[in-house]
Length: 387
Image (cartoon, rainbow, N blue to C red; front, side):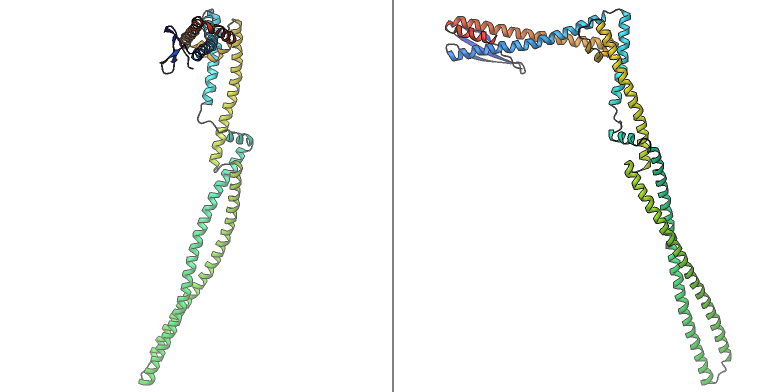
């Protein structure tokens, strides 16, 4: 707030108007031509405004000064109490300090549970543990089903590979049989040419060819039958695996739907997350219940302290529950007193400044009225209207 300080002129008929800027610590001056009627009026109005502003400021400063003085007086009254009564007050203050600290510690905790999570757990308090069990079982069952599906998928791929191999064997034995028959036919044809064309004895050749053909055909046929049997067996195994895999997939889908429902219901992704929320909720609930008890105890000891302070007839007892630490720790009391004394000194300095400002402005108005009697009635009327 700016204040204007007017200093009396050094030469008759001239006044020097000075304004003091408290924020920047600078003084600005302006010489007033008092022979000019309009400037003279403006100057008088300015002085009256200074008086009004100084009066308002003094009223506020006086009120604050009296409050600080009363505070200091109450401190002296407390320190003058008998030791037994002072100890009773100290014990009440100690309780208030401890309870306030507990409350502050809880409110300043960074790991406090979110209100939305707390309310959700509170709403489902009676079913959370059962929900955790269901969710945990569903997750474990989901892992087992995945393992079964993976195992069945490996067995199916293996069976399909075996079936492909046996089908290839069937086709290979069929080709081998054809090749064998063609070879036998060629051998018989050559033996016939040798026998008929060259008159050679080919009886042994026929016997060898027939025996070799019989052995080869038998072995190929046996292999062919075994391959066809394996193809049939692997087909049955593959069908069984497909049916079993379909059943497991149905279980997987049903369990997946159950998991999605439970996760949606409890607003979590995993059972461990739900369990963690539950454990935090239990701890948070205990702390909130303890806080409620502490709040009740704090209100009780506040009332007890106020009752005690009113009994000692302090002027402003209501501030002391908030300054309970000063009643417990003498260093805090000394620090508060030191701060209040500094406040009072600052207030006194400001009050003296405003008093001097108002007195100086009044003196200047009197001198202007004296130096310019033609304006005296107007000046007196302005002073009367503003006071």
